[in-house]
Image 1 (cartoon, one colour):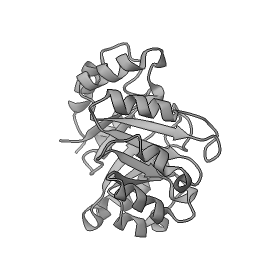
Image 2: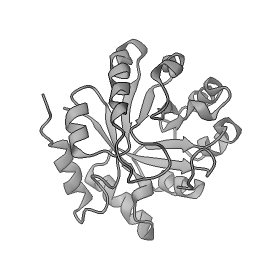
Image 3: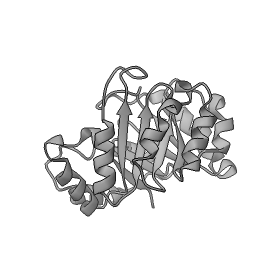
Length: 222
């Protein structure tokens, strides 16, 4: 079974970011997930524009940029100008007055448009945007911090989204509290990729290639 694995780079060792990027690429990571937080839309500051710029220039794998910021349309060009064609940019619909305008700027720049859905955001409120995005990032925790507990009611959100994938032509991704049991359960149900943080990838005392290989070899639930 094929599914993508993305490294949540806010969990990386910033004492040697270049080494982290190299070892993740060599280990077989599919993309680098970059969380940008402004301290307003979420109560935290995470990765910076300079972090994004460094990883974009140093890596060969795609970037998966998650903008947890208010009114991304105001500064979207700053981020787009530091990315490469084909990188993904997610926005939160609630953070923008006219999210479709921001998504169009992402498309026009040659990037992959995506939306991130908070645990408290209903699928019904983003239904029209599913027609123009290529990726939907479902938050299984409230955005802003790593290491949070999974919110069980989010499972119902996947039950609503996954049947719509073929009709609207988007992919579904998991972000937050991604443990082994979640991949075993939701990959067979149609989730296309998983953002890996401290639950499965970072701080395990094992080479990243070994960890990623073991994840791809998970025995899936029927």
